[in-house]
Image 1 (cartoon, rainbow, N blue to C red):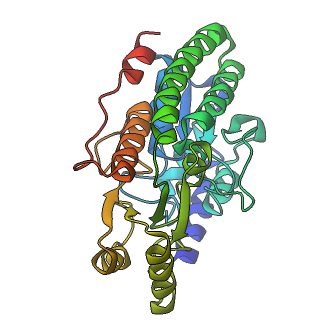
Image 2 (image 1 turned 135 degrees about the horizontal axis):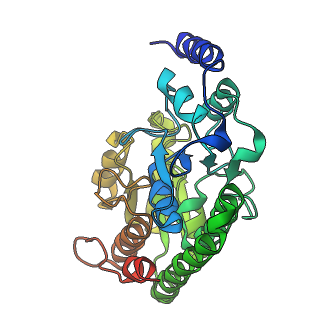
Length: 307
């Protein structure tokens, strides 16, 4: 279905549904929380500690960059007490249209990237670095506290447990990455700039400046030149995006293809802390030239579970 027709249907459903949706602050049972992407679901569940019911807008296996809203998404938002977005344009333009269609008031929306120093181009992939995760958890806890004041202390306590786990993860990989000699890699798309920034790595080139669109032959040739000149031997791909150009470069340079996951579905790491640990461990092993990268067995998630 064409995007324009789909959005017309979504808007129409919002108008029709507006006459019969329940008041947000009178929803029975647990507060309904709607998050944009899957990694935020486990984060909301950790901080919410069973006190909230969490739904996800972008389905498993779908990139938020190419997500096509569905009519039922409007109804989901109409019942939400809190809507959790990353911000920095990750949910643009579909997010703004859905919020408007569902009549979600500004005070019912939290952007977890608030307070994080963005890259010059306002890259939205802030959730992929543990250091950014600290601020995101704080923003989420305060939003939940405003939404459900009777459990505000619980949300803040749970947030501190998650933050301690993030700090522990950060300390481990800050030390590991500091010992690397080769810190540059090529990425399918610019998802890893904050991780690179926080650990002194270099995302030296990007294959897809628009997610899902493979680079031209000229662009591939330029990246090949950079890789040979700098001795780059790691190419990061993602399960949600095409890999053809990455494999061409790998054949020409002998570089390793390393699969990281921004969303966690394809690799089975649907828990936020586990997802961070998997990506960090996998990239560190690849840059260190170790054997086939495997998911990290970290105690970070266990600590947060019992914090």
